[in-house]
Image (cartoon, rainbow, N blue to C red; front, side, top):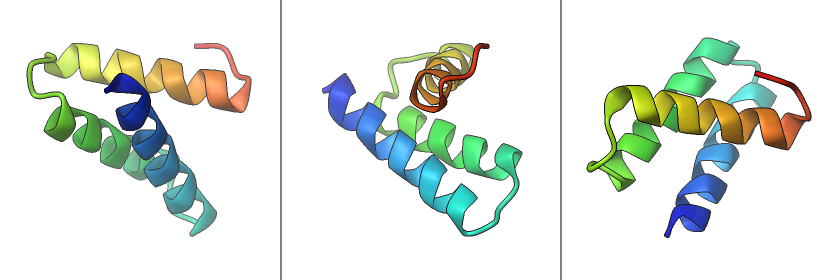
Length: 62
């Protein structure tokens, strides 16, 4: 389940960045997708998880 959410969140983030949208907007969209698909996760956890996924995908450190 989390693999599908991860893929979707990274796709949303990447596509929004490719369209020229600012990083915070793309990040918020990815976090909102995570919260929608995994409502049992807390708000803070959602932000950390998505940030970690983005850092792994882009090769950047938190």
